Image (cartoon, rainbow, N blue to C red; front, side):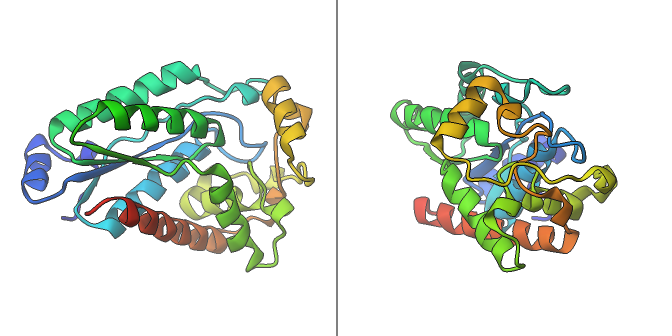
Length: 252
């Protein structure tokens, strides 16, 4: 099939896919929030949508459900543009997504959080759905440190430090958005942000008081080092890593 995005398919197309053995469906859980003065607010949603699409294509026999484009973003409410769901609201939304997809006949549902604030909610609702949804396998990549570790590894191949790669709007995210929608990136405003070690104490401060408790400009990393070629490489490597993870969890 040339199409895997369910939102671009007719019900006839989707039924043909199900009848043809497309028993796995994947969707990302993004956000709408500030990403420094240079990146669009839907950065996590954009990256997550493309990431899920590439994973679906790599897995084969997999469709992509619409990306959830808002998440838990309380720590970014200090800047304009953020829309934040309560964790229970986000879990309810994901729960309804998965139940709907299971009723449609999908046997495997894969959830990909692409915003750090969503990982806890995704992990919790995954565990709940595994108990309540019989006959459907729920899989999520809810290892935030693992994801950040992969990005740091990829950035290091280009001489970019872990601190510069960053956890939010730094080199790695800037590079990926440049690869996808360069027209939405204002590199004139790309800045260096917090470059220290984001330990548990600082993370707690950020969650309690907002990202400006750690970074005045809302950047964790050095966005000035972002480049489109690196971003394309990161997206492809991430998709392959996650596809491998999913293959180990379910039979496609």
